[in-house]
Each structure stands twice: as C-alpha cells, then as structure tokens.
Image 1 (tube, rainbow, N blue to C red):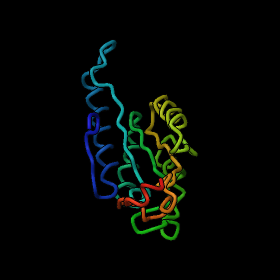
Image 2: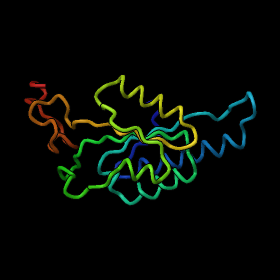
Image 3: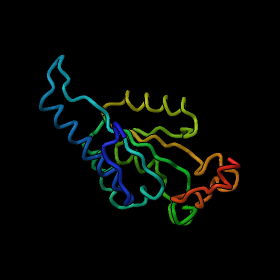
Length: 168
C-alpha cells in the first residue's frame, strides 16, 4: 500500500518503528534542510491498540519520543477496550492520557474514532504542535456495525463469517 512503510505483527513494534522513523526525519531535516529548501519534511503516523499500549517496548519508545521532542510523530490510539484475549479492564488500568503527558506528548482526548471529521480535526491539531509528539485517543467499538460481534473480542483477528456479514 502506497505510504505504508511498515506493518508489524508483534504488539508494540509499530510504534517502535515509527519512533525510529521520526528520529530519522528529525535528524535528516537538521542535516539537510536550509531556509526555503525543506528537503526532508514529513510526518510519521502510527496506529496502536490496547495490546500495544500494554507492551514494555511502547513505554520505552514513547518516553524516548517525548524526550527527543519528535513533533512530527502522530500516534492514533484505537481505544476499544479489547485485546485478542478479551476485555482489557482487568489487566490494563493505566490512565493513558496522563502517562503520555508525563512522557512529554501532546494528547488529544475523546476523538470519535468512527467520525472522519473528528479524526481530521484531531490530526490538524496534532500537526500544529511541532515541539512534541501527539497521541490521538480515538474511542472506537471493535467490529463496529456488526450486530452480534461489535464490542467483543470475537471480531478481533478473525473473520466475521458469511452470516454476520449478511447481517451487517
């Protein structure tokens, strides 16, 4: 897919890759850009789910991103309260917004992850903050639109099935 540089499977690896890419962008921009000649000038975007937020690597790289003030890094947090093992409230109780603010990130709370206009506004807000990375906290329902599997881990990592698709 054009514009998608990395896809990952293991939880937390996507944000780790994105932080590395944002470091490269900042380093190369500092080395090669001159007034009127922005040779390296792009944003890096990452998508993270609840499972990614629980992994130790995400804590480490997100802390580093804040420390390095990677202002062209924008992370979307798909906050649906579900991992492949089920509802996460029993084992993931972080105040994610406060954690990221403590790391030095700009946090946009309460983004409706099913509303394209709300997401667009959040991205525009994030892109306007250039001295720190941004976390867009997108509240979503996994399996949105599916009458029987929405909001359940049954729609995580598995096809809906012909009968459910017909109902959707």
